[in-house]
Image (cartoon, rainbow over all chains, first blue to last red):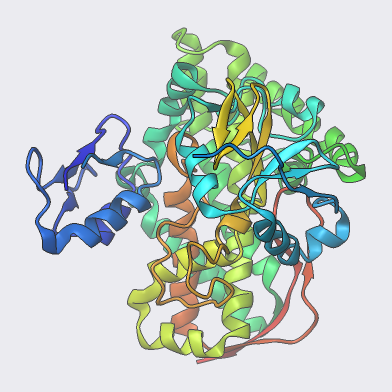
Length: 65
Length: 394
């Protein structure tokens, strides 16, 4: 599973990091870091990653495959 | 997918007083009829299920807002020039102007103040012991939002009435919407005066707008409508969420005990409250081209109605949707909308609601309903009007 992050669209609400702390984190400036940029989300984090995509308030996250 | 030609029709009026006060049976009936249901009374296609609501909210190229998100032409005309009723680049430009005020970083700077004010509100309520929960719920947003937006002290006494009317007027052209229109226009007139007299508070969001106008980033006329964008939706909605939280914890004491035992559940509880009693009933979108939804063909210009409150109770999406359970993962609820038009102030709303809950957890042992709750009559806002409670101190 690959996820795309639309950084300009992200407003830093942080619901993804609540849902999948191993996949997403926000720094003090509310800048989002996606820990699996350009690679596959490991199997064990997939359900959480999917929940994070579903919870994003501004739809900045998308499951690519 | 096969194209269905027969679209189910629902005849009862979703905006009749009885349907506003007792709305969930209507939503259940609509969900049973299908994913797209024609409301004969209002000539719109209601979307009562989660999947189609979400699909429409995320596809803002096909389902647009610039024709207005209300159900009558007068309100949709008044709404022109707001962020709520714009699309594409124009929407992005308007939203970006003020969104930086509502980022987690900007909100963090307000956190201490909001928590102190929440503590003061709850302390005063506990001292009185018997209270109207809606009054308690009103105090915090009213002490936070007008300052943030920069509304001058003079005129604040009208804000609540105006903000409620601004929503009410977005319903179909029923008696309530007609009654609400003058107050809704009154708010716009006042906002224009505030912009003309430059009487916004220094350093506020309104101040940002005036500067953006001076620098030519927005038209002067946009200043007033955009001030309404941020003021009108930030009062009743949060008041609804806080009142509903008090009501739900009073009527579900086992959930209150869960929260007392683990205050770490507060963020989940806020999502569950907004899922269970979604503050906004529904907004519309217009199909920008011929399209189809769940196999149902929709012609260009069709108006669809996103029923947030129904999507959040859809059994196809939620286990036991009519059960209030703060342990549930309700982060994907649609009460704040989602996507491009997702509520810009949801961080603030979450902060205010959480602050009240934490203040209650520290000071209150039990919450008991002492009289009959009454739901407010508003076409759009689902909010209690009166909720007599006793707060039994810890």
